Length: 380
Ligand SMILES: NC(=O)c1ccc[n+]([C@@H]2O[C@H](COP(=O)([O-])OP(=O)(O)OC[C@H]3O[C@@H](n4cnc5c(N)ncnc54)[C@H](O)[C@@H]3O)[C@@H](O)[C@H]2O)c1
Image (cartoon, rainbow, N blue to C red; front, side, top):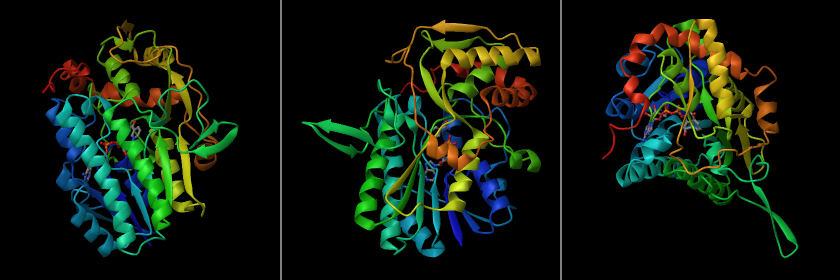
C-alpha cells in the first residue's frame, strides 16, 4: 500500500509525514517543490524554529521516499502517479497565504494557477492512470464558507426556492484570492466525483496553531513556524508578538469568531482519515475545527498564559484593514470531524502554552525580524 503526501515540507505536511511514517506500514511518497521556503525568504522572514535544510530533511526517513517536483506540472504529476500507484493521495500542497495572494495581480494569478492546477492535475491524473479507487483527500479551508449569518453546515447548503428544497454545494464565499482557489478545488472535486467516480474527502481545515506534535518532539525534527505578516497565521503570529514584547495587534473590535484547530489535532485527524478510508458514497466533507474563537479571546488567552513565561503582553486594537463584520458570531458544525479526531482535543490554552514554551527559546530569532509582523516588503 502507498500513500502519496503532497506539501510534505510544509507546516502541516512535515508533522503529517512523520506521523504517517510512525503509525502506518504503508510506503509514504512525499512530494514538495520547497516553494514555501522561497516565499518566506522573499518576504524577508524566517521560520522562528530552525528546521533542517531542504537537502537533509528527507534524507534518512525510514519508510518515506521523497520526490522533489512541481505539482502544477501535468507531466510530473502523471509520471508520479504512474510510477507509485498510490492507494491514498493526501494533497496538502498549496500557496496557503491570503495576504500573499492579495499583494497584487501577479501573486493572485500565481496562487490561483498554482493551487487550482495542482488539484486538477491530480484528479485527472488519477483518472487517466486508472486509479479511480484511490482515496483522494485535500485540505481545503473553512474559509470557503465566508462569514454567513447562519450556522455553517459541514459541507453543502440547503437551498429553498419557490417552495422546493435541495442540498447544493456551498457558495464560494471566500474572502481572498487564495480562499477562492479552495472553492474552485471543491467544485472541481465535485465534478471529478461525478465524472470519474473518485472517492474524495474534502477536509476544510481551519486556522492551524501550534509548534509541535509527538513525533516532532521525539525525533527533535521540528516543523516550520512562521510569524510574519504574510505567512504567520493569527494564533502563531500573536504568540510570536507576545514573545518579542511587541503588542498583540487585534484588528478592530476583534469580537469576530474564527474557526481554529491545533496542529496536533489537524495531523491526528488526517492520519486517522488515511487509515480509515473513504465512507464509500459521494464526497466526505469534514470541518476540521475544534471551535470558533473570538480574536479578542485569543489575544487575552495569550496575554494570560504569557504571564507563566514572564511575558508582559499588551493587547492593542488597530483599525481593521479588512472588510469584515467585527462582531460576527460564527457557528460551525463539526460532528464528523469530532468523530474522526476523537475526544482528546487540545484546548486553546494548552496549545498556546506549548507555543509560548517553544518560542521563548527562539526570542532572538523573532526579535531580529519583528518588523516582519507588519506588511511592507512585498508591495510589488
Ligand atoms: N496552516 C493553516 O492555518 C491552514 C488553514 C487552512 C487550510 N490550510 C491548508 O492546509 C494545507 C497545508 O498548509 P500549510 O500551512 O502546511 O502550508 P505550507 O505552505 O507550509 O505547506 C504547503 C506546501 O506545499 C508546497 N507546494 C506549494 N506549491 C507546490 C507545487 N506547485 N508543487 C509542489 N509543492 C508545492 C510548499 O512548498 C509547502 O511546503 C494547504 O492546503 C493549506 O491551504 C492550512
